[in-house]
Amino acid sequence: MKCIRIGFIGTGFQGRDLIRRLAEKESYVKVTAVSDIDRESAQETADLYGLKVYATGQELIASQEVDAVAVTSWGETHEEYVLQAIAHNKPVFCEKPLATTREGCMKIVKAELDAGKKYVQVGFMRRFDRRYQDLKKVLDSKEAGNILLMHCAHRNKEVGATYTSDMVVTDMMVHEIDIVRWLTGKEIMAVQILKPKSSIHANQNTNFPLYGIFELEDGTIVDVEANAAAYFGYEVTCEVVGENAVVSLPQMNPVTVKAKNKKEEFLPSLWTERFDQAYEDEILAWAESLKKGKADGPDSFDGYMAAVCTDACLQSLHEGGRILTDKMERPNLFIK
Ligand code: NAD
Ligand code: ISE
Image (tube, rainbow, N blue to C red; front, side):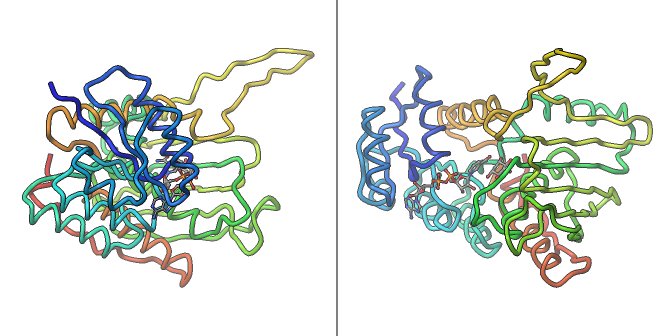
């Protein structure tokens, strides 16, 4: 089988991590090209893995030596690159967000509808986390009965000085939005964001944590604590209250140390430790989909719905109150 050649646009933290994961696997797919507006970063990555550097993302996408594209640059740049990859009939992995506006996401959905084909896998990697998959299996088995409530927490140890309250929604809560939709198979009909008093660890003029309340179409209520400055470490929790049982997302099994009348558990500092296996399975699943010639996993409609919900959350954050999300029916192309 002819090797599938992948070009990465964006060689920062996430791009390099995914390139490494693909490079470590002997496989029918091979990363062969990179591009970054930071030429030095692209060159450093290229030197590590023997890749060709393209001056621009546009040139990389258009190149006849690139069969598939991964977009791991800053969020605002995703829309243009994804649309261009579709126009060149090339499959594309796009880190979240698919686009920074719902209109941008809709353009991508429409481009796929016009082509009559799915091209895009969006980087909602939690769906590949085995603990979330185990949780979903239990929920799907109906052992817990109908789901009534879900309690979620998403805690980052710390963030950079430029991190804003809006980013708590678009960078953090967006993962809960996607995973709740995936776990339940239900759309989010209304959201409300509350601002508890801010932590001493919060950045200036920000509200860390935020508290979100999501209403699903079947009446399930979900609450989400999203804290960008939890201080103690990185943690993601999810407790699902069903009619017959309470089901919880398993945690990592940290090393415990018993010493001098105390017991200590070591928690992850970053999402990369907690979701290490999920990133691996996510990118290998994309590689597998390239082999099959059929896009799979979180799709551009999921990216669109995430943007609809984050927009509603931002409106609630800034204007207050409960905001309806005006959900759209999933087009046939996106029914699995
Ligand atoms: P980063 O700043 O480390 O890297 C981004 C890179 O993109 C930089 O090297 C920058 O120079 C480059 N870039 C910016 N604009 C560009 C353009 N127009 N063309 C080409 N390159 C460009 O950021 P990161 O942490 O790697 O995040 C990248 C993306 O990955 C973001 O969308 C972020 O939300 C996402 N992300 C997802 C997860 C996850 O858990 N799914 C985790 C971290 C980051
Ligand atoms: C980061 O950007 C991610 O996407 C991680 O998955 C998330 O857990 C973290 O909170 C974000 O900052």
